Amino acid sequence: MAAVAVTLTGFFAIIVTCLARAPHKQSSELVWTDFVNESGWPNGVSFLTGLVSPNYMYAGIDGAIHLAEECKNPAKVVPRAIVSTLTIGFITSFAFAVSMTYCIQDFTAVIGTVTGVPVYEIWHQATGSKTAASIFMAVVLLAALVALAAVQQTASRLTWSFARDSALVGSQFFGQIHPRLGVPVWSLVANAFVVLIIGCIYLGSSTAFNAFIGTSLLLQQITYAFPAALLMYRKRKARYLPVNRPFKLPGAFGWIANFATVAFAVVVLIFYNFPVVLPVIGSTMNYTSAVIAAMALFAAINWFIHARTKYHGPRLAEF
Image 1: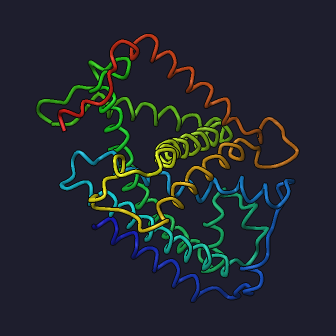
Image 2: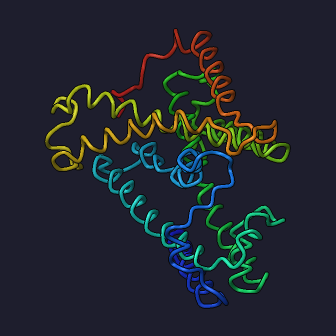
Image 3: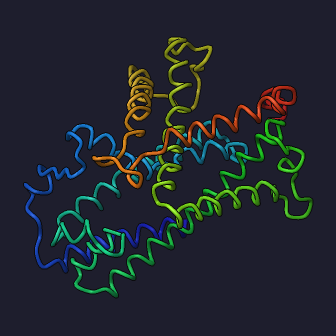
């Protein structure tokens, strides 16, 4: 709760300060109707490829699902956590984006800022103070640290779950719980090592790093689409969706949600592989498809040398 309080306090402080201090506000016509496209793609393609950024904000939305075993009454608590996160996240991010757009003084300077952080330039332009912009950035970094701790918890929980079910090479190590600390230490170390490697990749090439981000989002949407597609295939029958379940969408909303999930996954499967700008050169190429191929190769190797004979599905009897 303290992290939520700090985040929301920072959110209101940044918005109020920027709106109050900005020497000039952009017109509503520019904010709501102007579409700037310098990608070289048609507007529609530019919009769809640009969805990666807002989609990234919801990359951890499934975190509560992976911690369901640690929840009391997860059938009720987990859906409530997801819906609350979506609601708060949408309201705050939409308000933030609109407010910051009104506060832009020089769009060209924002796009071409030497800091590589456009929002920092927006804050600097709005407040006229690098100190204020730096304080705002510190607030964002504080929120990011809290989020990273949650991400590490969820990721290590996933690694440990697969290892517990003997689905990963090295399950005998990753599936261990430290007798004194009560946490999967080796899973935590493994995930920290992966994060370190990806961080080093970012230092060497932001293009390669962005490929990992695009891949994670694309694969995440695919994992959402499969159960939604299967539910529609089974016509959302009570055998698969019990009538007395604690959380359910009324009427046709469930069908709409399932269809939208599958449709969105199909769209991103195509457009998240597109280069962001034209013409394409080595530094602007989208290597998401290459990263997916590498991950598929790793999964295939893991399956044939280990999981094919060791993995027999989740141990549901223990739950």
